[in-house]
Structures are given as C-alpha cells and as structure tokens.
Length: 305
Image (tube, rainbow, N blue to C red; front, side, top):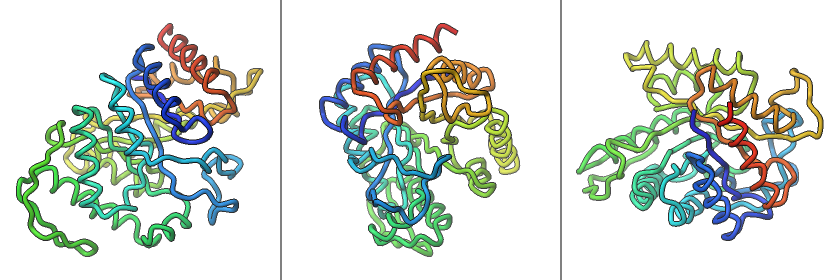
C-alpha cells in the first residue's frame, strides 16, 4: 500500500517554508504522494454544516492557498512523489480552462499528477464563483467529457448542454498518456456508480473499514456492468487524524484516537485492499515541527507492520 501526506496549504503553516519542509520530509522518509485541498470561502457560519461528526468547519480553512499553484510549487521541490488534489472542486472553472491547468501541471511535474475531483459541500462557494449549486452531477459529467476529449484529440471541439468550445488545435498534452488518473470523492449511490462507470478511482475519507469496503463493492459492480475492468480502479483513502492522548474505544475510530490506533487502522486498510492511505496532520493542533515528527512516526509504524 502506498502512503501519502497532505501539504500544509491551510492554516498557519501555509507558506513557502512549510510546503518545502513537508515536500522534503515526504521524499526523504519514503512517502509516495503529496495532496492538497480546495477552498475559496471560509464564512463564520457556512450555509451548510461541514461533513464531519460535529459539523464544524476547521478554522484553518480561513487561510487557504490555490491547490494547483501550490502543487506546481511542490513539483519544483520534489522529483519522485505523486501530486494529488483531495479534492479539487472541478466545477468552479470552465472545463477547458481546467483541462489547460491540469495538463500544464502534469507536464511541469513530469507526469506525477493525480486528479482528485469533488463537488464540495458549501453552496456559498458556488455563489461566490457564479456556478449554480443545482445540477452538479450533470455539470460534472460534461466536465469529464471535455477533459477526456481535450486529452485524447489533437483537434478538439465540444458542443454540450452547458458548454460550447469551438474547434481548436490542442498541442499541449499531458505527460501521462492517455491521461492523468482522475479520481472522484463521492459517497451517494449515484456517485459511487459514476466512479465505476467512468472514473479511474475513488477518494473516500476514513470510515469503519466494513462500511468502506461495502461502498467499494458498489463501485466495482458498476464497473463490471459498464464492461470495465474493476481491478484497474484504485482507492486513495484520506485520513484526518484527531489525535488523543489515550486510546479511544473502537466505536470512535477512525474519528479520533492515538497515533498508534491510526497506524493500526492504516495496516488494516492495507489488508482490506486499500491501495493508498494519505494523512492530513493539519487537522490536529500541532506545530510544523510536531507535524514532521508525527509524519515520521506514522510511516515508520505502518511500514514496520
């Protein structure tokens, strides 16, 4: 199983020195990937509750960086790790501009991009970028169509319900051929089936493993029904540790627990068939130095197993 880290692109460590230190830590320690999320607003009272146990949005989101710019900066300070978005709200840009940005990043990183898309949870952000909240599924499907067409064709045009793109030559192609992998964060039955039908994988968040693998079976069944190879799909599992000083009961994991409990959770995930786990230590109060220390202890504990 591969292991990854979230970059400090939120909160007080969202700065050049913080990103460089985590990048170097990741490569030196043997991590496989670096990930960053996407935020454009941090209202005091969001229009919808945050998707967590307490419904509270992390206040670290009040200081947020552009995810693709941050990953481009990370690419310039690394040589090996893959660079992923968890998640990029792919509906906030016109799809042809999204295709250009993603392709540029894959070229500049020499083929290390992992495109993780999501639809977000906060209607306020859609208002801020003048994109309708309703109809997100249809907008996502057409965005995926444009991405695939842009990456596949030297001459490209698109005429759809939402977007019209006049014919153009597309000379810039991603380093990864035929395209960078595109994963989706989805949890509804329809979203899971969409992954099986047309995406390269799934971006879930940590949950009890029986529930996680049950949802994975929905994705694989949809792939089979669409005449796709389910074994070609991958799962990259985000873990947001909320660290406690003493062990929590099994009913609270993976929502909260000790570092040792999260190590055990990652090992169990590997045994269950999860392809990659990446952790975001920015979800727990810690200085950058403490975050780096946790990073080393986590990978050492998982690899020891």
